[in-house]
Each structure stands twice: as structure tokens, then as C-alpha cells.
Length: 195
Image (cartoon, rainbow, N blue to C red; front, side):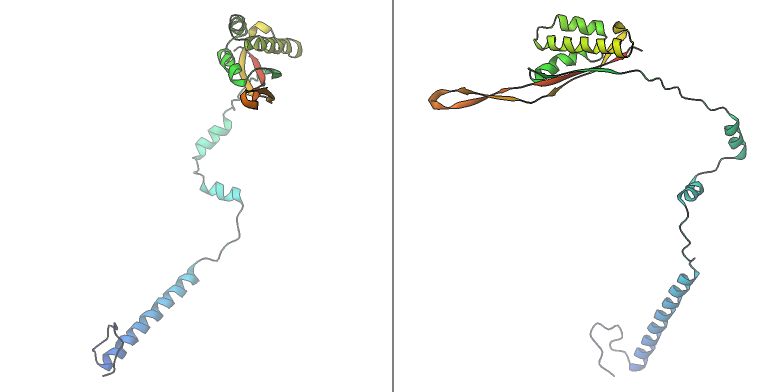
């Protein structure tokens, strides 16, 4: 009896049985290799890449011929896209902070021109005068450039963006100086005709 390696399943068996086991294992391995070779041989050779349209057409579900004919015979409905002109006016470097200007422009968005004029006329904030100037400029642009009627317009958007900040200094106690930020903003209004 030959000594076998520890952990070998054929440990403690006679030499004849060991050779039979090894022969069986070798047969199984060769059978598996042959099966893998046959599978590779049966697999189709990689075809050339088909165009994308052909692949997409193959993936789409086909409709019955009656439905195809009816779809071709039916007149196509055209979608009429009505483009309304958009008129814009802007005031740059207005000497107010963008936050204060936004408090007023939030009241204007979506309102008609008459309502916006009334809101700005009775607003207590000083930036309302600047917004009124921008609104009147936009109305004048609409009437002159696009031949629209000023009273038939509504405010599409109103926005206040930050402009450059002017830096100034002020003397303080014990020889110090503090910076004063004089903020500016850019006001923009766009108008469009009412529906």
C-alpha cells in the first residue's frame, strides 16, 4: 500500500482502486473538455455588425397589415404651434439690493399690465419706481417693435439679479475702518400677449 497525501479521498484504499479512481476522473475531465469544444463549434460565427435601423426594426412589434393600411390612409393632424412674441426690457446697475428688488417683482409675475401699474403706483418701497420704469420701457418696446397693444399684455417673467457691489469705507472707533457694501442689481421684465 502506497502512502497517500492527507486529505486525499482515496486514502486508505488499495493501489488498484486508486488507479481506477484516477482513470475515472481523467475520463470525466476529457468528456467535459470535449463537450465544451462541441458547444464552441456549434455556436454561430460572429456576424458583421448590422446597422442600427435594422436592429431597431427587428425589435419593434409589428402591427397587423389592416392597421398599417389604415394608418397610412388616415390624414395626419398637424399641430399648430402658436408662437407668442416675448418682449423684454432691462435696467442694469440699479442702486438697490437684489433682495429688496425681488420683494416687489414677486408681486408682478403673471399679472396684467394694468394690475402691475396699480401695484407699483401704490407700493411703499422705493425700488417700485425703478420697476415702473422698466415696465413702461417693456410696454414701449412691445408697441414700437412688435406692433402690440400695451394694455393687452401680461408679465411673463420678472427677475432681479445681483450686479457689482461698490465698496466704500467708513471710519470707526479706535482708528479702525469698516467696509460698506453698496449693492446694485439688474432688473428684467418680459411681456407676452394675453391668451
